[in-house]
Image (cartoon, rainbow, N blue to C red; front, side, top):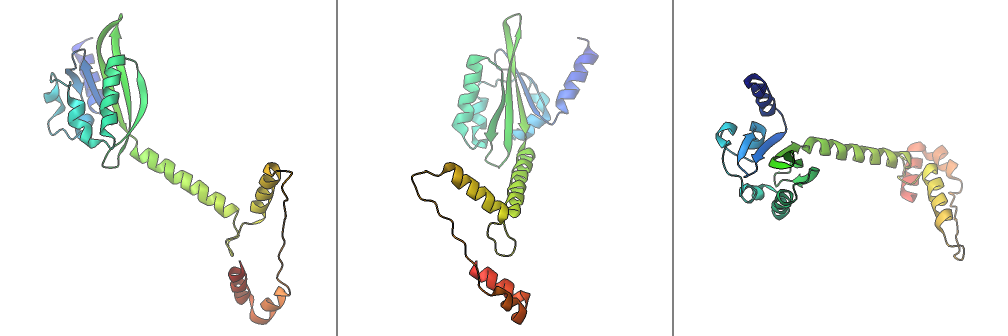
Length: 203
């Protein structure tokens, strides 16, 4: 690989949003980018870390994780097994949500080190949660009468279907219907606003 090609790759890695750390077979840093330093609150330029020993880095960084012991154990397990592991989920104490990839590096079965990639997916998970809540809200709206807050006809059909499918034939099943006698006279004599209040109060 030419010097220009190597410079291109290094420049690409240093400008990625993902936090990148490459360690050699002795756990000395071969390459690290600014995103990694920012994520792990390392107050020095990434190039100054090249060549430093990472053997106890998990212990020094575990306080940033909500489950610090799980973080340390997972690092130790990967270094022992040397098997690629993608999309591990971690939560930081500051609320950030991360996914991590561990990729061992081999050349003709010779172990040369490994790559750690941390992706900050906090916003992704937030949007996913907001979408689920919005979908749940829409579902509730589609099955609820807006005036009384009771289940509407769609809710009733679903509930009755569920009861009929799951009910024990040896157990009685009853359906009660309630009607407000002469309710029309309330609307006629007092207006629909009062009629709505009566419906909500009765519901």
